[in-house]
Length: 251
Picture 1 (cartoon, rainbow, N blue to C red):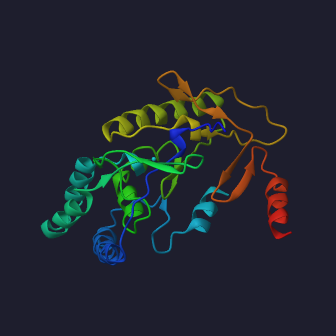
Picture 2: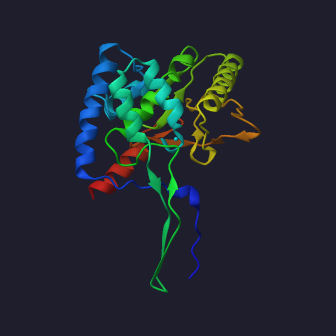
Picture 3: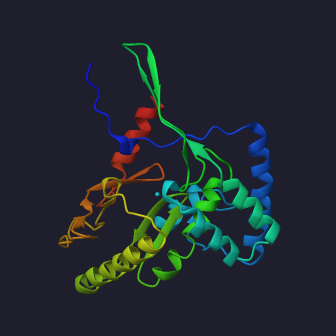
């Protein structure tokens, strides 16, 4: 039997002990206290924060494996955490190792790679990881929210554009994506074009605008619908598709 293996579909899984998660909860509360006290996290970020849930992000609407540890620690230091907390986070991120294991069902055998030190990313499945990622990209929304409306839920990002003039509409999109390109490079992040698409929302009577969104000779795919935090939305904003999906689940 031939299996089509696409490595991009796989993500590392962290094996975390119960004690580790208890310790993470304490760390989470300490850093949240600092971030809340000085209003550090931007208001466009939802998820894993008290009072900002999926429904909040949906109402406003009507990539964590690449986190560089050195950049993250410098951001934590910039946001004013104490020396002791900085050392704890440094220890939490450092000295982690991973390896790849495969299982051949037909031969009933396992193969494992050598252990390799983890230099990027936050532990998947951890309590602290989602907040760390939000903090890592915290300044991203502040530099693009003048010409767009960014919404970030955990590590899923949506950017909304609206303008009555097609020329200015295209111009705003171009400016934001040039800015994104620069910020992604600075933070050693990349845009996954395979998991990114755009939807041009319009009424049935309005004509569509010819758009080409992207950079580095790569373009984002146009789609007639999208799923946003469990809500299926079509470009003309009917609710038939979403209602049909909900009905199937109820049956």
